[in-house]
Amino acid sequence: MNEIFNFSAGPAMLPKQVLKQIKEELYNWNNMGASVMEISHRSLEFLQLIQDAKKDICDLLDIPENYAVLFCHGGARAQFSAVPMNLLEKSSDNVDYVNTGYWAYSAATEAKKYCNPHVINVIKIKNRLYNIQPMSQWNVSTNSIYIHYCPNETIDGIAVYETPSFPEKIVVADCSSTLFSCPINVSRFGIIYAAAQKNIGISGLTVIIIRKDLLKEPNRAVPSILNYKILFDNGSMFNTPVTMSWYVASLIFKWLKQQGGLKEVNKRNKEKAAFLYKAIDSNDFYYNNISPSNRSCMNIPFFLKKNKLNDLFLKESTRFGLCGLQGHRTAGGMRASLYNAMTLEGVQKLVEFMQLFSEKYR
Ligand SMILES: *Cc1c(COP(=O)(O)O)cnc(C)c1O
Image (cartoon, rainbow, N blue to C red; front, side):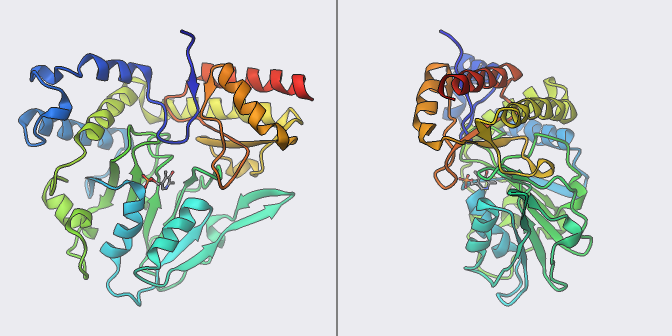
């Protein structure tokens, strides 16, 4: 069977090596005579898995001592609620939400249930391209408790590459589609969260990195399973965790270390993205609408100038061995997600197809 390359935005492809390992140990994990899905989350073997996974996360991201790693349910959207519920002292507290696109705006919308978020619009259009204002120009409130932003907009394909520097603020970041794709300076953040199904593993799990001074008993009634302090005090096992997702993530962290860590992975991600953007820019059959300095390395939307050919493009690309290229329903067009697991070979195959298709239907 010819290899099929999967460009899905999430749930997304996993490294072949990891899939193989899951298959090999499915019936008998760690010599326990059962699969990892069938054993207690409190067994010594599973507790070891979680301890190792936490250590791998800390190694990969170079996390300072004063931070904790938590695992949660409910994807990133659960954090859209958990963040304001845990951090707000009262509903009249001021909070900033930076609007860069679909996900950042969704987080702000959810926060409206708990407070009156100040939404900062930072997207500008210049020469018909979307770009994000530099952080120094963000209209951050003087008295806000925290500032929330999304470094990589999975749907819009727009990214903030600046490292935040808001020393008086708690910086909260939805890193669902960018965490573990590149090194980050964790010390600049109060809370980083990421749903697993983009770059960490499979859905169900959210990884949270939180500065320990924020692990306080919240001022309001927060469901225990979303209460950061309770999660921390219980080793993220206040209730039964998503064990299979934790297991897959633990394999991904090991795989990332084998790849040479995040610096190396980032180098490859940049190469892959540059290769695809060049193919889009150099062929007037296609276009991308993000300014080069804010183009995402992870999620690359592109459009056909003859958009009547969209369905045909998708049909023929499937036959060519490419899948998951349909753009998000709100954005239209195409989108290629190039997470860590995507190989340069896969991107080359996509570019080859784009060239052939444009010659055929020009
Ligand atoms: C996918 C995604 C989400 C939503 O994640 P769920 O796990 O479906 O809740 C939120 N934010 C970003 C940036 C995402 O990419």
